[in-house]
Length: 628
Image 1 (spheres, rainbow, N blue to C red):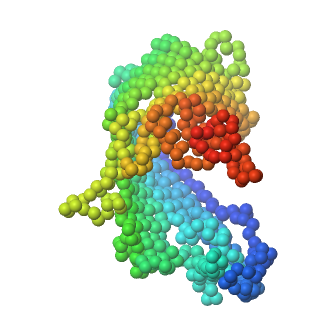
Image 2 (image 1 turned 90 degrees about the vertical axis):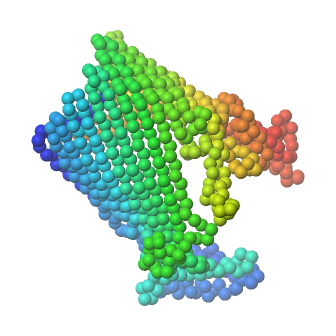
Image 3 (image 1 turned 90 degrees about the horizontal axis):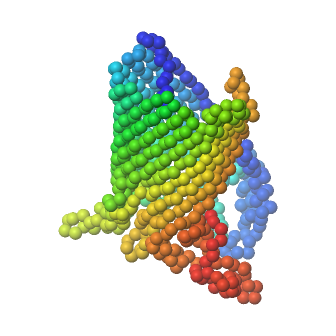
C-alpha cells in the first residue's frame, strides 16, 4: 500500500500552526494524614510516652511529651505534603509547518517547541527541534530526504523524593523563628541493646541549597531514499538511515548537603555521557504483476546495520564552595572509585526474499526466506536462516456468499515458519578481558599493564529459533459491527538461550548457552462489538473481549541443563524451586510435599516418592507442584 499526502497548489506556500496547553495538578486527596493534635493524641494512645523498665532508659518521657505539646499549642501544624508540590503547573506546545513546491520538487519545514512543568517544584521538561523534507522527481527517478533534530532537557525537582515528606510529623516546623530553613528538624532516642540517638534532617534544607539534577539529549536523524522505476511493475529502491544520539546526565550536591555531614570530602558531582550512532541500509528490488484474476509480487531485500553505544561516567567529590558546580572543581574521586564506561558495537547483514500470490482475491499465498549474519553470536554460528509460508482463503468473496449480506468478511488462514531472536548483550559469545579492573588495580609487571578475563566466551552460541504454526479465522458481520479473530498456535523454541551456572573456580558464575527445546501452545480469541456508531458526530462506542490460554512444556534438555538441575538440588534446601524436566512446564515449581508440623516433636513431616512419612527434606523427593 502506498500513501501520498495531498499536494499544496503548485507554486503556493502553505503554512500551518498548532498550539496547545497542558495543566499539571497534584491530587493529594487520597492522603488522609493526621494533623498535629491528632498525631500527638495517637502517640499517647499507642503508649509512646509511657514509662519503660528497660535498663539505662530514662523515665523522663513526660518532658518529651510536654515539648511536643508546647509546639502544638503554639500553632505548629505543618502540611508537609504541600511543601514540595506546585498548586498548578502550566505548560504549552507549539508546532509550525511550511510546505510547498510542484510536481517535480516538493519541500516541507517544521519547527516545534514544548514546555512541560511538573507538579514537583523546580521540575520541568523543555523540548524543541525541527525537520526538513525534500523530494525531487526526475522521470523514473524519485529522490527524497528527511532530516530532523530535537533537543530535550529535563530538570528534576531539588526537593527530592515526595515520599520523604510523608514521614515528617506535622508539629515540627521546617523554619526557625527568623524564617530560615532548619537543617535539623529534631533528634530522638530509642532503645536497641542500649540507648541510641538519631537525628532527623530537614529535606527542605537540601532543596534550597545550590544543586543540579538534569538530563539533556540531542538526536539527529536523516533518512535518504532513491527510487527507480525500471519498467512497469519493476522497481528498485535504496534507503539509508543515519541516527546520532548524544545524552548527558548531571547530578551536583553542595558540600552543605546533609548527606556529607560525617564525610571528609564534602559535595559531589556525578556525570554520565552517552554517544550512540547507528546506520541502516536497505536495497529493495520489487516486482508487481496483475494478469486477469492473478496477482503476483516478488521482492528481494539486502540489509546492512551497525549500532554503536559509547558510555562514560565519573563521580568526583570535594567541592570548596556551594556555587562551584562544575565537575572539574572536585578535588578527586571517591576512595576506591575511578571513571567508568562501556563501548559496544553490533553489526548485522541480511538477505530477504519474498513471494506473494493471489487468485481472484479468494486464494492467498505468501512465502519468505531470510538469512542474517550477526556479530553477537559465536564465530562458528553467526548466520541464521528463517522462513515462512502462509495461505489464506477469503470465503466471503465466493459467489455463493454474495446473498449472505450479514457476513462482511470471513477468512480462513494458516501459516508455518521460523523466527530468530537477539535478546542478549553484545560480546557475550566472546571471551573478554579487562585491562582496568578493580581486582588488579595498580598492579603491573615490569611496567606492563595486567589483564583479567571478564567474560567466558562460547564460539558455538547460535541463533535462538522458534518454529511457529498457526491456524486462524477472521470474521466481520452485521456491517462490521461485530468483528473477531480466533487463533490456534504452537511455538517450538529451539536452542533456547539461558544463563548456565558453572563452578566459581572458573572465575565466572554463569555463561550463555543454547539449551534444549520449549513448546508453547494455546488458543486466542478476540472480539469487538460496536454498540454506537455516529459518523456525523464522530462518536463511537466499542466493547472489546479477549481470551487466551497457553501451555508451556520443556521438550528436550541437554547435559548442561541436567547439570544445572543437580547444582540447584545441592544448594537449595527446604523451599520450593524451579527445575527443568522434559514433558513439564519450564515454570514448574518443585517441592517436598509437606504434611505440616508434628506436634509431638516439632519436626516438619514430608511424604517421600513412595508415599512414606519422613521427617527430613531431601532433593530426591521433589515433586512437581503447579507452576509460577
